[in-house]
Image 1 (cartoon, helix red, strand yellow):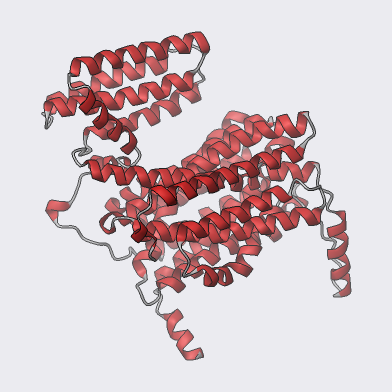
Image 2 (cartoon, rainbow, N blue to C red):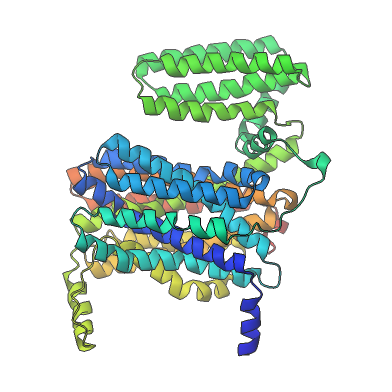
Length: 556
């Protein structure tokens, strides 16, 4: 038996173990910093909670949205080059964060870090996929997932408390993250070997712009379907243009009258998409000059509105302009197959529904940490642990702190993941996810009972069981139902749950915490609100499973 096990482990090439090591250090560095980042920015740097929520609500969407593009570019330019870029950005971003104290500088440094992390994510999982096969992929990804949680456990549990005690400013915690990621440049440059790639025929290869455009067609599938419906109902193009102009003028009026930039921006985005698709529908295949004129016209009109409107911050203008530029992918997207875009829309809807659960998850790095710091009395746990250590003859004085919240989550997954996976391996995906999210919701609701450290730990453990059950099932379901020829693209889109969950969770969570906890001193209401978000997610999955999921797609 032991020889067979040795044979299985030896079936993984050196590149696999190097990738697992990289994942361990990257995730350990990330969770090590994130375990104290919110408290560090509010207590050490003096930032307001709402400002911290804005930072977290920006860097996490970057981290989870970028894999859609970076994975496609890595397939074209090579994984080794992409990893070099990723670790360079990570090391620089972490180090600058540790040295800066101004809000703008810290914000920029964390964005650099997020660009590196977002570049890293699809490359490292792609490496694992390419160097394993059917005989060892299950074990391979199991070890890979184990390394994620092992890093998330060890760094906050042991390294972070040591560095915090040695440095009152806590900066060495973030410097350690810079070292942990920056040092990975050495094995990337000298040991990492490019994994075997699928070579396309010359006629099937796409240029860089087409590759990026193909990455965005799933995001814009709702608008493509809406345009197809509108085009059928409004056959005369002049009527379409007239309605477009009227809606645009109405949105601009509402911006100046009500100050709703969000409404104006969404309207501009939709109108721009309709403009591109209508021109393509009328002109057929673009000539180069026609493409250029249409793109310049769209860029000038949209750009002038976004940059000349008064009352917007520079950050808002930059972020909205970057997102606005993605509509240009519609110039190169083939939108002649309605059925394809219906499937894209269903997939996108499922990701959006599932993101509700991750609004709850991302409270682990914001609201939950503030709650522990402000309300939870851990003295009884400290006493129990220190008495046990004394019984063992260990003279170490242990103290529960905010970084141990993520430790509880990671340790629960490390201990129970394989056991839970064995229980649910043959169950249907969506019903299993509903039960799992129910457990996560229950765990969040338990926090509303009282401020006891033991009640808090029970809630986090139950939430973690729900997380470790729901997320693997979600990934498995997408892998089973996605088109095989575009499996990598669909798997990259899975990270959209993080974009939605982190942005909504960070910004809304910070505002709710300030209102219900800081101002009203009612933390119980906060956790009940988040529990209702979990209930809404379960209802959404139930309706999706009942009305939009083909019966055969549930077979695994």
